[in-house]
Image: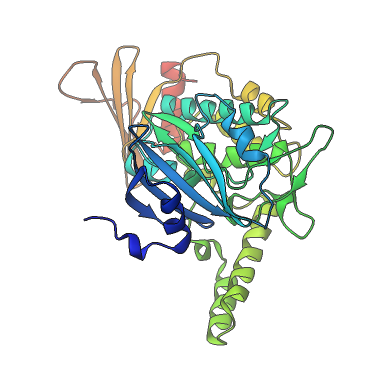
Length: 370
């Protein structure tokens, strides 16, 4: 179905008037701070994305030019960036064939090595943003703002990016995406520094390695808080008051360090990686910059090719010539194995019958897993 241009928001139609060479074929308004148009640039002869975003009047100055000057494999290339009006701007980037990371995680089961590689790519791109003399803070790293192209992660959506002057320690916080906001970013005096971007990258790592984080904000409320929210709705208070209440509940979890469910990460993820992710989002003694994060994450040995097929089954491929399949039933894990290339799995009774943790401990000892 052709895109109905007359149904687009005013800003999108205004942008199209400035770009007659752009032929849109898809419109997305699900973002919290703007719109995305996908289509064909007939002069460049390539598929591109146009992101329209809103900001405080005259807030955007040198940041688009700084991002456009970056050439890094894990930072989405900005092909063009302009103001539409004092409080609205856009930038143009290449099209990513796998869409955003949120979609990618929903549609794919990531192996342990792939999750590790994507996190290292994210941190590498973030290091490029932070490096002198560019010194850019992203301030809004989340799955919807990261794109995936041919299994390569790309930092994108630069609407919240701001330059941090040399000699400065921080800049005012972005108020977007309460789930990914670090503790120091809340309140009227909220701020962002380089460790704040590391915090958000740590949550991305948590998701890449299989951690669960619902985007439904109300699902994070305690029962007593849910009752309070229901009472507010019964009283028909303005919608913004409901949002403020929910945001305050999320803020409490963030500041206490209880937002994430670390037990949702599969047992096969090495504890060293989990410890690194926990430090990345810690309220105290967090990584001060990306180099510390990368150094702690570095793996001296190849990671086993684990993948979680579903909530009950995990597989390990080609480890010392064998494939393994682990399946949980009624709290007990059965282990099957076969030689690489063989057709049938055989039960391994010596390893079967325990919990996930017990089974993984046995496997790690027997197979020398990291």
